[in-house]
Amino acid sequence: MGALELILNYVAPVALAAIMCGMGLSIRLESFKQLIKYPKAVLLGLGAQILLLPVIGVTIAVVQDLPPELALGLVILSTCPGGATSNVISYILRADIALSILLTTLSSFLIIITMPVALYLSTEYFLGVEVGEVEIPKFKLMIQLFVMTLAPVSIGMLIGNLYQDFADKMEKPTRILSGIVLMLMVVALMVKESDYMIDNMRFAGSVVIELLIVTMLLSYALAKVFRLSIPQRLSVIVEVGMQNGLLAIVVATTVIGDPRLALFPSAYGMISLLVVGLLSLLYTYLQPRTR
Image (cartoon, rainbow, N blue to C red; front, top):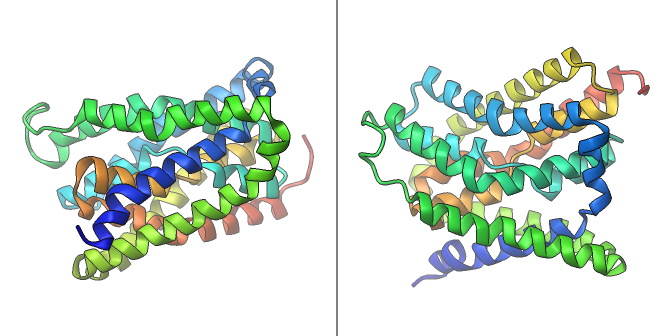
């Protein structure tokens, strides 16, 4: 086994679990009070993450007439909830950080169901077969998602609430590790599948930007229609706009075993922070700072 296969198949999943555990360290039980205090904001943000975003991803894939492997890669990306990075951006933008953390937590719990279902149903559209004729490793996917996301987040939450000083110290290293591992994964894929990645990266970048802009604009429109406060709107926009690119890459390369499915997550990893950050800062500048 070469170094690239070692990184993609073993190092990345372990690193992802460590990052998700680190994300759990920042989650306090008090954050769940938001569900009772502002149920409208929580339900709207969660609905946009787990329902609206995959629908937009599928719609873009159909309109663009993407090849099956690209379409399924876009579905994988659109079903991966934002990680710790979205919480950091919400903090920088003075959004509702408690809402952001709660949305990240709930969507991370739900992904073990939403991603397998989305992939299972999308085979009929993108592979031209009836549902069930193509084997999607649903149970393997659910188990590995549990091991890589739900379990480490839960462990991190437990540690963070018992040892808050330790959790605070680990917050910055976790963010740094997340960025390093994501870039390492992108580089490894670019080397391993150099011809395919290079030939399609420009097109993938344009599709990812389209996904980001459409999802953020629609989430903003929904947040405004339902009269969320400015900080809550920002949290919803960031949470819907920011996806967990590292998780999408790991699922594509390790769980499903097809590096071609990681094209869109790789492109996303390189440009998402820039696009989401610029649009959110523009929105912050144009809006009055009132609740």
